[in-house]
Length: 308
Image (cartoon, rainbow, N blue to C red; front, side):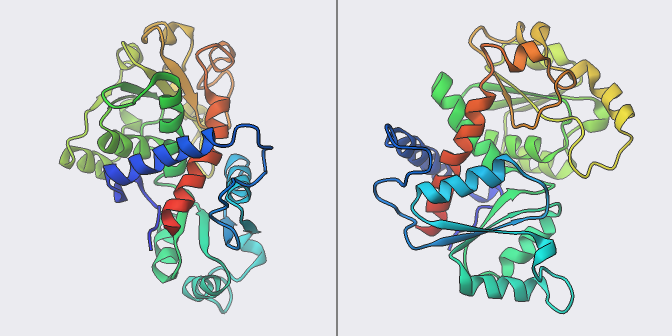
């Protein structure tokens, strides 16, 4: 049984296998309707339970469509509507019950500890649909999207601007170590990556640079990425944080410092006029809508990998 919780948990070979499977399955869908099943229906007769502690658009839609395309079915569970570590039932007992009902679980949670504890008691695979520490499915979709646009990501330079201490930047750094690309984090000192991820990066010899200078972060970059400045459940002084991050807004001036064929990525939802300007996210270098679509294809491959 294989779980998909952090990118760092998987080998480079396993992650490459997932990406190549996603490419193949996407290509093989030419001519099929959006929710039509793949010809081989590898998830036929199987069910995924999806638990959402946090609001979701892309994760909810993309996993549901992914399961349909694999030939299976999904059940969406709201923690407020089930015994999910509440009342007389522990997380352990809920996990044991789900093991009897479904074949795989996806959890989108505010607490990474919930994910680890839930996974510990499941006898079926669990996929991290997002936690406060990592967002591996999104980053796998981003790798897929990059390679569709500009070829192999190995040896390329990916720039991250804004808050360097969030789930997306954590998973991006892990991916850099696994897929062998360079990552530059452009962020204020106050929002530098956390010490644990920096320690992991050093131990695994990740090609990582951290700078407080936005122009330096994007110079000769092959891809510029950012995220919302204020994440869900971010208990901070919002106006103060936005003021600190304002110099890291992705705009045309910064995009022009990157390589001529550089692309722009954002995992969405977007704070237009905050972390990115309209002319960038809606411009020719933006691939954000394909990123959203590729969540379906990357997650199909992740599901299949977990169950193989």
